[in-house]
Length: 131
Length: 137
Image (cartoon, rainbow over all chains, first blue to last red; front, side, top):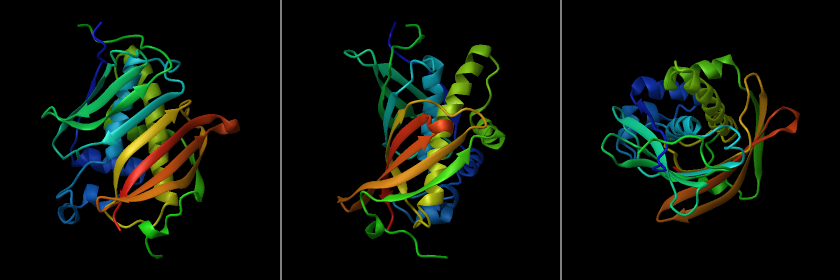
């Protein structure tokens, strides 16, 4: 076993960003108004950070049972904004020393992390990607 | 409309409020519109649980939108920490409470820490989260 988690992917576009705004009631213009977003330090529209968190949860539950995730601790930093048109991939890798600790990430198609952090689980996962 | 909550208005240690949200069919349907519905049985079971965990995150955001309001435009999330005791189940009513637990001016940016606690029906502990935000004004 390599310790890599099975990954999940999604394409981010204006439609998914609008749908996520409806899901969370978060209509911050930095996500929806290109003219406003251009005036901010982000320099343009960015996707909601927690959309990447939801994608990461999807990956995590493909690898662990709910019991294994009881009292799980997820700690993530939004390291780079997600832009429209990017395809995101969420995954992770087990720590070499601690079998309950995973380095988790969401990367865009340029291979650069948009979200990075750790997942601490109650138990090791029931499945992992083959080598 | 009242003035937006500014960085100076946050009081670390102060409870900001609570709200009650239901994990209903509408939220579940909206989640599937974005993240899809799996066709394989094994993935369906995983997605059901993932949807529950995502809904916990969504409820954190919805409570934040409702309680910490009005906000200046342009706030962004810097970090999120979540301890997931259990996931909400369909039709469950979840009570979400938000408190300010810290604020800091660092490298010219205004950082605010909000603690979010979600409790299910019968007092069932669901999650405890910490949202670290860069406040716009």
